[in-house]
Amino acid sequence: MRENIIRYLSNFDLDVRKSQDARFMDQKCTPDVVCFIADCIINTIDVDNEFTVSNIWDAQYFIKNARAIFNKPLPTNPKARHEYDKFIQQPLRMLAYAHVLEIEKRSGTNYYRIVNLDILDYIAQRERNTYNFLYCYLQKVLSDSGIIRYFDAFKDKCLQGKATNTDFQELKSRYDRFVIGHTAINTEVEVHRIFSKILNVYAVENQINGTEKGYMSKYIFTFSDLMYNRKNWRDLNKDKSITRQEAQEQQDVKQQEAYNAYYVQKAMNLLRKIQVESEVHDQWGNGEATQVHHIFPKSQFPQLAHYLENLIKLTATQHFTKAHPDNKTQEINRDYQLTCLLAKANTIESSLNAVGDKYYRKESFIFVINTGLDQNISLGTSFAVLKKELIKIYNYV
Image (cartoon, rainbow, N blue to C red; front, side, top):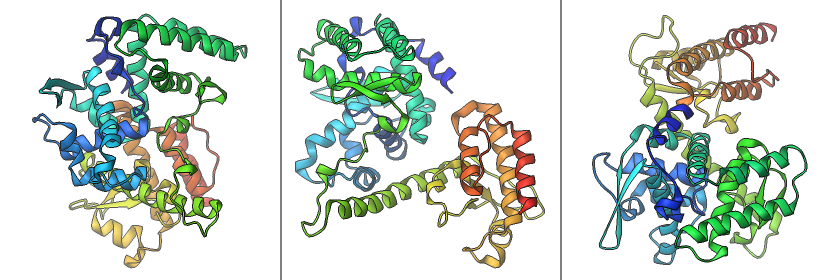
């Protein structure tokens, strides 16, 4: 899918020196926020109609999930208006600069329209997809703007183990001068907020140091470090009678449950959308495939519950008589679990051959298997070898 994104972006000149638009990226444009806003557009906006920030803000889908996932005040709270405006507007502006959306300003209000539904849908599916888009997009902006060479020079020093905070400050200073010299932004504070979001995506892709709190990070930046939804214990609204650790644990459980519920439902909806027939072709596979089954149960493996690679489309008979013996939904037929895994492997391999990583990742499927079966199968294992390994594992137990 990266190739499709790169090909689409190649149709446009994203040079900031020409556009003089510093909002090609912004503080709230993290993979989880952009993914969520894209998902809200897909689920609440008619693809043929224009929309504004308010259309997303007023949608029940946004109201319910923004509070649950990001632990924010209710969007209907007037005091939260400014915060939510940035939370929605900044990703929209970025997507418009990338020509995924179209933007038109009338009477002080930005009106948006979907231009590339395929890429928007890809972004909305999962945070890893959003990251892929952000990297391709930022690479294009930095290249068109003539400043990618400064990031590449910093990368080379990091990979050689020679990068210092002085090298980092030099990169940041060059970026400051570039943005202030070519856009309406005239304060370094504002530039720094955006710089971190750009460098850190670049850092994750190249497995180098990023930036944190204005300095070069002491460690190699990872995918999870990019998220807006990182824990900030100063924001915990905790009862004074409980300790900070207890508050943290309570917050973890509540937040994780809300997070899981949203992403599990999102994955199930996607599977229903892309898979019409049962994925298991056996004597019970005739008829309408109405059931989405967790190959490794949600109750035992909550960390796998939202992985599309752990979900499989079945008929009601397959689900309630084979996957769950005698309709006992708390039990799993281990033999049929193997059948489901082998069928899912075929689905994923076919999908990867047809549309690339638009829906599935082989690495994620192997992670699901390793977690569910307590194995250590290499991520580079071929599908043919993987299926043989699965049969061997189940036969030995």
